[in-house]
Image (tube, rainbow, N blue to C red; front, side):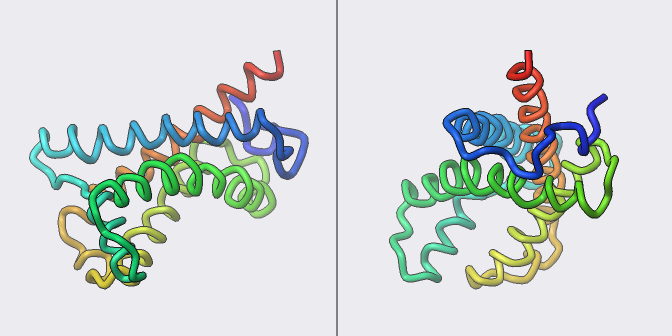
Length: 168
């Protein structure tokens, strides 16, 4: 098993085409897993249905920007899922966790990152968007927690897998 400290000898990944592809592929995998869980599996199991596009549209509206559905999708799928969250893992969370908790395996580290994403999105962005803090801790709050942890794990697993392939 790869520990967080041995994933890469560098503190930060190089800014390169390979890193850009790593960001996009890990973000795509994480976003698919998040949406599959939150918008398909969770409702099938009788739990809340996540509405990340609705949150994105609320945020856009609170910033005085257009709120049409395509803009919400663009915000959720591209800016957040494909770019911001994987960049956050590669350039902020993974290096910070490496320093604070050396030797921590990537799996619990990525779950911690997912919890951080949840706090950011459901605790912070909802407030900025004019929605209740942590959505009043309703069912959607807890589905969002699981969804963000799944995102963190799947995105990080994709990074680990692609970094291993790249080393071959």
